[in-house]
Image (cartoon, rainbow, N blue to C red; front, side, top):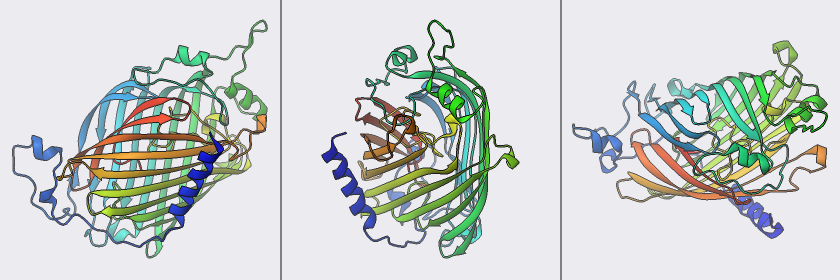
Length: 423
């Protein structure tokens, strides 16, 4: 990336992040009748006249999935975005979940469930990320490498990408992340979580050990050097986390701040193949420009391995965050490294006065490293950018259907579908 552009991006994010963080309390739109969602257009009954969410009522947006994602190809399935308010909205955040089942044109079968549960008066937060994937995905090695652009609008052609440097892989993956956080004071929480990662039946499709025409893939080479089984590995550990969260809504915040600092200790005593320690940091900030109409959102996330080593597929990689949302503009897994940092800014705005249609414009940048080719952390950056459409699926919980068009600085393109905001 052009050095002047990289420095400009750094300055923009620095200015944004050092601006004051304002504490906010839980709030809702005062007049929900002025807003519209899908239910108002397809329901035969009158729109809900409630001025706020009902305590104990389960809001259950259900959506058939028929679309495309750069890492999956064309896909079909079903998605749920449940929400429930356990106590009064004046002192308790909305508890949310996101579940889906997908079958894709690349032969993938994916089951995902994530949740963010707030108990009465927000005394405890339960956060979970559970997955069972029968997956296929190309990998591009460690660090930031220059490859010809990938066009992913009409499907992911692995054979074509292989010639451009991609290394197709198939693997099965089980993830179980579950954290319990206890409120310490105000909006400050601390807690512990169990983090389990199991990759098995790994098939490195471009690997060739033939003496006459050998090809050693990045996954195979890394695994041999670091002493991991090339067919399966386990990364199990405990996560100690501190969270500060004063967002007004966890599904689609209009204002507030979120900070998450975690220390993960992977141990052979818990079944991990090797011991390692890792620091994970995440910060999000939300500003209102015009009430219920225009907002700014900022996201900073980083992963750093302090000691030991982790398996190739367990290393920090774009698109493998909790909701698979990082790195719009590139396919999932495009960049991977021992350490990684990503920053993103998004302008969110209403298109219709009712709030039924909205739009976003986003910009992100990312850096990682590869010690094997002496590529240092923050030596090279990539840039992603794009725009998107928002359709209000549920006005009470602020749940949106998201369709984003992303572009990468290498010339790559992609379309991204989802429920709830990207961050």
